[in-house]
Structures are given as structure tokens and as C-alpha cells.
Length: 405
Image (cartoon, rainbow, N blue to C red; front, side, top):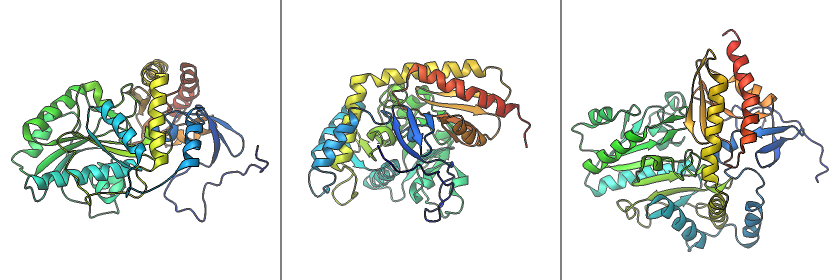
């Protein structure tokens, strides 16, 4: 055990760039769905590193596997074959019903790859200025390309000019897609999140996803799905779109794929697997041996421990409990989402709940200004879900009972 005295976290640092509105705590370690800060305070982790810590913290099988890999080889280079890439690609494509994978380190990188692939696909079809259908409230990343595809003017402001080539439509309205693309020969793809995460836990309807799949097939477009936040078992299926019984042409993954080790992936089906050729795309860190071991072990443990079923059943229990305890509370709009990806929609901005929950020993997030977001580890138990409800519901009720400023 360390003998270093605990240090109180500072809300600001003179040396770290000020890109985040941080809470004034710093975490030191975790176990399961619990974490501790530098002052020894314990928290129930309802955020999971923003859907990253699939297996929770300090998993007894993941940790020794990563330690063994660290002792062997952390990084090589994509100049050479990486056997872990073959293992993880084979597993992911089998689970997804797709054919090929490209590995990177983040969801942003995976989505950049998707957008590049869509343009290259269009050029192969003789389209000089390819266009992609994207969605209101979407979030695909903060690079210039992914920011341009994102549907949030607040985070786009100050970074203009954005990239051209995007057609924006509302969610769950197939006629809006048809109208927005009418007589436009430059459209090459539709790019969507099955459940919008940063946009406020907004799901695409399953029948709508099937309609988009049919439209893409009819018009020769790519159906490209961002499963960075909602994938990897979070909803009770490996990938959330599988509830609709469809298979995309391209899909992005990251967050929970490596249980905390940075891993991103772009999966491709038969229509797109050969679009990229050597020199078209690449990465230094993507697909390194440590990251690949993390991905392989994460999936192995998820399968062995039945974590998809756990996400489905515990998630349903948590959602039902929240709906029951918040029923009739003035200012609660709805509880939405699926599995362990849930949002409590309030009638007014609720950023203050972040600190209040933290003070009460619960980590969560607020997104889209008025949505309390829960993304716990997939190992969450029913008892821990009940504990989460017992902490969170009084905070929400007290917040909503206060007069608005």
C-alpha cells in the first residue's frame, strides 16, 4: 500500500489545458462498480468512464491478462502483422455479420475512417463531391470532419468553416430523408447512431432502421452506423442495431471495446471491405498488441460471464425502478434508453445534479443540458442498481422542487 499522503484534487490546474468542466475530485483506484478518490471517499460508478469500463474496475481476469501482455509486447507497428488484430477482427466480424476490420484508438478515429471510406466509395462510383446524410442532435467526434457531421451548433461554434458534404435530417422520419435527398445524385451514405448518446439518449426506432436499410439498398447508398457508445453489449445485444435485425455496411466501435484500454474499430461488410487499399488510411497506435489483447479478453469475459443478458435484465430493472420512483414528479419528462444506456429527461437544464450526485457518492453525467445519463459497467448488479436509484431519485426530486433561477 502506498504511504503517500492523500492530495485534495484541485478544480483547475495551471498546466493542463482547460478543455473540460471538471468536478473537483481525482480518482485513485476502483474495484467492480466502485471507485475511490484522493481523499478516500467511495463512489458508486454510474458512468463507467462514459460507457468505457465494460468490465468495471480491477477485473480479476482482465488485469492479469493485460499485465502478461505488457511484459511481452506493448507496441510494434503496422509495418508488421499483429496477431491480436487477426484474433479480434475475426471475433468482431463474426459477432457483427461483417467481413473486415480496421483498428484505431478512439471513436473519433473510427468515425473519421468511416467518413473517408464513404467519400472513397463515392469516387469509385464516379461521384466527384460525395454527400452523406447525418442527423439532428448527432455526435460523432470533435475533429473537423466528425464535428461537421455532428448535429450540435453549440460545440461547432468557433470552428467554422465546417466541411461541406453533409445533409442533415431529423430522427425517425424516413420521408424527411427522401425529401432531403430527392434528385441528388451525390448522396453516397446515411450515417447514424442507433441510440444517440451525447444527443440525450435518443433512440432510432427499430422499424425506422429497417426503413433506412431498405432505402440504402434501393439507392446504392452505404448504411453506416456509429455504435461507439451504444455498442459492445450495452443494450443487451452486441450492437444496438441488432435489435432491428439489420446489418450495416460500415460500423464504428470504441469506448467499451477495450474495457478502459483505448481501442477503436471500423468494421466493413462486403460492399466496403476493399474500398481502402494500402496508403489510403493508417494509424501509429491503432491495433497495437496491448489494445488487441484488451479487446479479445473483454469479449471473452463478456461471453463467459453472460454480460449481454446482465445488461438487458439489470438495465430493465433499473429503468423500471426509475420510472416507478419518478412517476408523477413534476419536471420529469421521461426515462428512455435500453439496457445499461439510460437517460432521465428533465424539463429544465440540470447540470447542478452532477455535483450533488458526486457529493452523495454517485458518478453520472448530464448531457444535452437536461438529460441525466447513466452508463454503468455491464457487471452492475441488481442490488447496485437499487442503490443507484436510492441515491439519485431524492437528488432529482429535490432539484425539481427548487424554484427555477
